[in-house]
Image 1 (cartoon, rainbow, N blue to C red):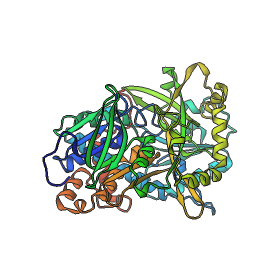
Image 2 (image 1 turned 60 degrees about the vertical axis):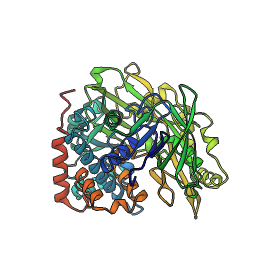
Image 3 (image 1 turned 30 degrees about the vertical axis):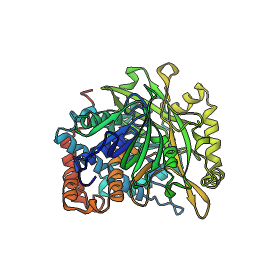
Image 4 (image 1 turned 90 degrees about the vertical axis):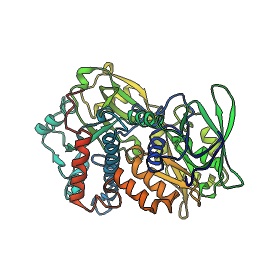
Length: 505
């Protein structure tokens, strides 16, 4: 992305693979930082945001660590570690800063089309879980990122907070919840579409739908040759680029392996599918107004943390419960049953086998999930909504997640539940693997990726100035500066119109 040079029709500065929130975010950042850079985006489906970024496919819409219990593990001594929660909460604030820049500068219209305020809550039952939640609350309330969080075990107050979840319960049940009103609901599908609409207005940016990347090879001059098939015409072409980003969700691993970079060796993928119960009764939907997260079952993956989730999708209130996990050899919802076997190589067999042996409880959990009947799913829902009726809910297929398996000297291989950026030594190609928290922290992930892949350019005064214009807190720590945190949130709240109400829906 240096000096502008004359290119043929098959030469660009940047290739982005996948038209989800990650590519949309990276493409927008690059276009703002380097307006003259030519960008070509390839998406195998005939629409953008149709895989993991879609509202119905995305398990977490606004992960900010305010209510997700898997981000605050309990230590052996009983204390609660909030280190990861602090990092995610800070990253989400950066996302809101960037989105505020987009809205304030007219790059994206109507913030309410993709983000709204919604209380975030954690909810548990049973003596041990209640004790854990109280310790978690006592720890988190001391940090300014989580100020405003409330805790209660009082049934009367819980009925005010979550009437639908309290109906039909007895006073003998030991329950507890935390609540914080600064949470949000983000429709990443709507945001992705808005970002691509803006990018398509820019000279030098092209989006190719129904185009599948078939191969990635390094040319003799160090650039990358990407072979693409037009799925409509069946024609192939090869496009050369200085920089390639693989943001194809679950499909990223297979494409990364095609690149042949040594940094990709040893990585494997473990696919986990998902399903939702979607409420179809408007009167039931209207009784719940929160994102309520529970505690994951032993051996279950983080993406399967049960939650009763209020969302706004296509301008309408929706209520989901789940996700229910399952196993599929597909790496994408619209993928192939051969994805998993095709990903197995000599360099990752050992890490994948080792991770499998270390995660037998997860395997058993997934088998049990696959075997669930409609009655089993309803029983799980009734732990959160005791009065739930089968006729008010229907099954919705969620997105596919591929958890990262990576080499580990001690165990041979470990299963990761976060996101992992893998890049070549020269920074000319990078891929994003993994899932949660993913979309919610997409801005900080992509800013870090740019610094990793373009280290010299990322140090220039022009680059830093523009980045600070887009993300005012860049280079500072919201987590360590209470005043900065307050100012950042006040600015984002005003621009994004984050008022705690859904009356306008």
